[in-house]
Length: 63
Length: 345
Image 1: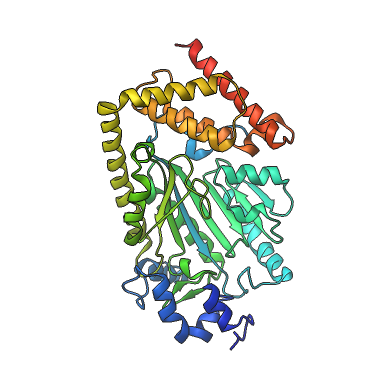
Image 2: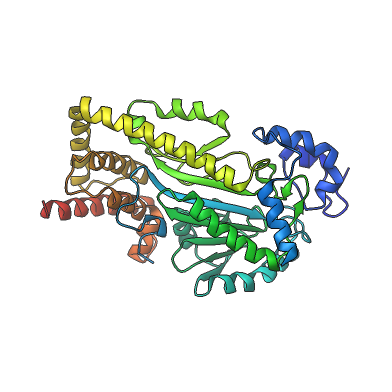
């Protein structure tokens, strides 16, 4: 299974813990969630966007 | 070129927390991340970012990463201004530095953009505020890759979310004296912290210098993550101060012996490797902090430690030196430094 934009293979993403491009998260989302949570083991609220990140992002969109 | 790094400026920074670093990782939505991008795409990202970074930094310096001589890149690395990534040929990379050396931006490193701020002492929130302001300015011009679930998207999962690495450089010679350093570090690993050496990722702990940073980047705000690092940095400062107090009251004789031994080694002017000189200077730093060496200023010792790193020595001489030549020069410089201090005693 490959990312349709950058061509990276899912097995490579999972093996090295690295994304190839922004589209990879859309392509592989269901596979990424649990693995990312494991890697970021302190991320208790995984699945919830971070307040700062969201605020910054929205502020940027409003500018 | 030869003034101290910004994080080494100031007269009386903390003698335990030497510096603070905030790093944000960002990628552009429209391009494959550097590890997956071809040369043309990497160059396109650089072409897009270069004018923005020049405008942002004003009179700062901008280098295409494949152009500067290796010794200059090594010099920037020794000052913690760039990552080890640029020590290898980094085609399409770009390094932008503000005139004071407080802000550095790296293009096409592991991510499209790495923004880094370095402050003297413990200044996590101050550095984070400035980094966030720059991030906001750049974000108005650049479409950063972002996801509702994973936050800012980065090449490595370990940086997803905030893309933040908030770190402090600690000098913990007293904990190391008691053999407590490794033990304490292990004890803190499960609290979402990461420990690295003097030169960041992949570097070992050298002469009691440890970089403490957040390990997780997702699920908490940047402010919370930096706050956690600050909290534990203060805890380590407390542990180190306690250990220093114990040395001062119960082991001063032993420390004096070791310090005298270090002074003797330095006074001989014999060749010294960078690692060995760092160990000796670390010991003198502890002695100076405990007021056993009145004419030694602790902060000057740290400055000297950086100034004796390989690329610093070569640039100060103006030509390339082999390892043996550097070791010999380092030994001579330390002997001269010691002699100059003794003249003022």
